[in-house]
Structure formats: structure tokens, C-alpha cells
Length: 199
Image (cartoon, rainbow, N blue to C red):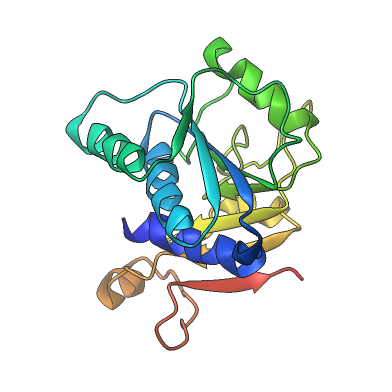
């Protein structure tokens, strides 16, 4: 919940919610997809209009409850991969997280192709889907997100990211940050996210 909320705040800072922007939120089967479901709820409350594409659902109570919460809020779940993203102002990439190991499975090929081809801005959660968590983008074919929201701490692959970069998730106890020498920046006031770089 805290990770998804911090992502929604970061997105709202960069995309004007007053315009009721349409967001395509692509959710994967793991924790990254759970973050996508949570941020969809909060974007909806911030006057965005999210639509969720969740091609491979996780049949566990936590995820099922998040789906039900989104449905109760009137958020649309797409039954098929969109042919293009021209009708959306933003794509939220919550498909694969840091545990992703290439190659991309066939069941996700269509949605990855959409992200490869689109000119709609992409905001990736934690790492861009398809990137190696340490080595970064593939030499053959990779998405190039407009915005990245790292959770807890930036992953090594963030060194190869040149766009708008936020850190989200103000929930790491200081003792844990000290133990792993995370050197996290200070969040201002009551902020849940912090902009690391990008204009």
C-alpha cells in the first residue's frame, strides 16, 4: 500500500491530474503488479482515469482483494491487450519487477510489443520491464521509459536510465538503511516520494 501510494504521488507530480488523464496500468503477476493495482486506486482518487490490463492474475487473497477494491471504485479491467496506446496519456509499467529473468514469456509478448512501439510516455515501477536488474537494458530490444520510480532504493540498472527519476517508499527504518548502507536521501516534510533527477 505504501509503495503504491508513493508511486501515485510521484506520477501526480509529473502529470497534471486536473486534465483527467487516462492511464493504462499494466500489472504483472508479482509484487510489481500489486503495486500497480494499489497505485490505480490512488490515481483514481486523484482524478486520473486508470484502466488496468492484468493478463496473468495471482490467485491469492491479497491480490484478489486489490482487484475487488479497484472494481468497487469503478476502475476498468481490460480483457485483451490494447492494439495501441494512442488513447492514453500515460502507460504505467508495473509488469515485471527486480526478480525478472529474461527472456519475456510468450504470454506477455503482445503487451511488451505495445510498449516497444508506443510514443505514449511510460512510467516504470522499480525497474523498466524487460531490463536486467543489474545490467540494464537489453542490447537487442528494450523499452525506453519517460519516468522511473525506484522503490526503497534505486537498483543497479537505474545507472542506465536518463529520464525523470523518483524514489518512492518512505518506509525503510533507519537501522535497516544503516545496516545495508543504503544512503537514502532525506524526504522533505510529509512527502512520500523524492525526485532524484530529470526535468
